Image (cartoon, rainbow, N blue to C red; front, side, top):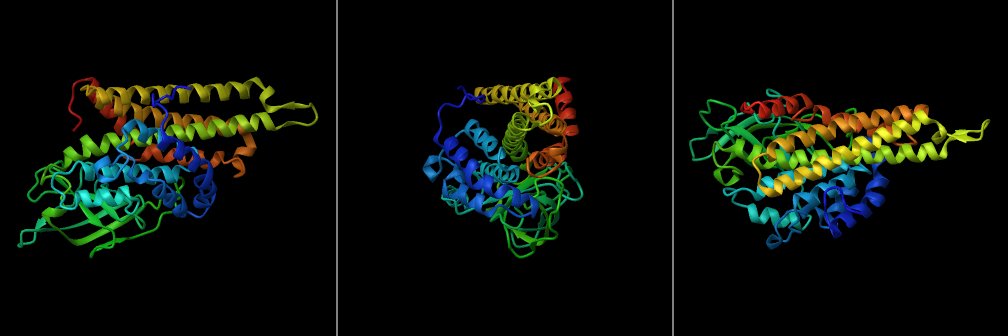
Length: 387
């Protein structure tokens, strides 16, 4: 069967499929129930070499493309969207590191990532700018010794207590706009860096998404991921496309899980007094059909978007935004239909439908939010700048 993302036979996808059916699935329910980081699942990803999936081969990675990344994320999300979210943030952060011409330890870090010994993540969104991750309100201030200090309240950092590093951002000294930012790398546990709360949210409860406080952190030029004042380029040209594609694939994985569980329930459950099954009801079959079609549309758009990205077309940013919007909306619609099709059983935890229903809601509010995406797409279509 041809993969929707036009990915030919891929051993890393096979590995992800096996992990999703095994350790990732085994830990998913408990991770959600206890709001607990899926450590065993992430350790399995590291041991399988998937943390370095898109790290260049010359640095020990697999050198895979964005196409393989999307397929792997989708597979993980069919079992545990929290694990998939952790993975998306890690790979996106690693791509930001890989894009750097200024980070002193870039190659060393990428080798550690490829070896499965380093988990990274993003720390962009701030309390003062909320979901507008591209607009930090924190600033770099010269320390008088050739370096800088910064303080910030970073909100909802995935893997906050487990990542080894954060790819973060702040306005450059004297910036006249938040877009005049600098992306820098900070190690978890560095002086002045700490998580300030724990996460007990509605969905994606296992992704250890917590606020991180940064107080008088020393940042040197060797820590810069972007050149001074050019952070927006890193955020919009590297981070945004990788994050958008990854979260779109994650939403598609959620849809797949909801469809599989709904189809299984309709086939197995029924009415003793009539001898019929739920699948014999046309209304329920119609809901399942609508779910399947909506997923197929979303996966097709993502597959096409990957082709557009690879072609180098100037329309690629528009398709990236549309793919994320389509996928997160598909996840909302499909999981809602799954709850309706499975009825009372869906409100119980034994089907797993309600977990995916909750996880799907996170994509709607995760930056860039659905409202931001609509505005960006509308701006692009009418010739307006995004910012």
